[in-house]
Image 1 (tube, rainbow, N blue to C red):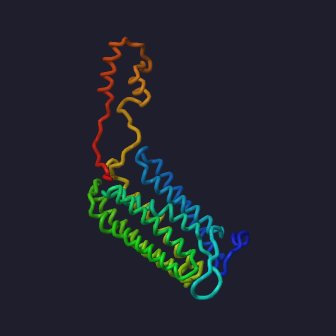
Image 2: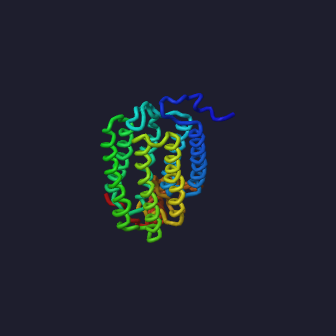
Image 3: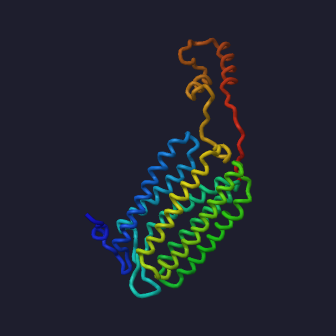
Length: 307
């Protein structure tokens, strides 16, 4: 049985996805699915409290898999009149912009958390990523020449992102050391180059209607694979030997050395330990004081992230 996606979900525009394009999208979906399985298993090999970067990768890859499942099924598009090169309508894939709205800021967060940037700088950069995606969606939905105004606003947001990735970020202090700074520089340059190709692909496809929808899918599919699974696996591999505390990220819970959390709580409340009797108030106070000294965790100061 062949690919029946376009028979079940017929195209709704003059310029539409072909069966070969749908085949390609199913292949991309399969790669996203396999990548999701790998990174999920990889995440569970990490100790609890040190999985943030891996869990961000899970969210990004899951979003990409759902998006490409929809597009391969010829779902998640709406017809918009073309401005150039003919008449009729072209499929605009809003489901792709939903994917980018979620994944693009998270990709930047994954990268920028490794730097010494303040939270305010990171927040502003993530906002500019959202501006870039939203202006691209609005521009694609506008059939008139005014679409290029939104396109320009998106480019301005992209210039800010480039400034942070390539200029501001590398000049901060990397608490994890020079090895991470080298990895960040490579990853930031790689991602910045890919971000240059996205607006170019948009201009030739949804913007000016120069290339076909199938060619558009091939172009964006390659970019999403390179910016998604390939980038994430590279960056996570660079982080594998780095102490998590160096990033200045605090865990939500503390574990007492040699004493379980339940036993520590019971001791603090004056309850007897497992297998022990009821102690007198004086003995309990002495034992509590000794227990506090014995169970107080040794806190290693890690660099905090400024606001």
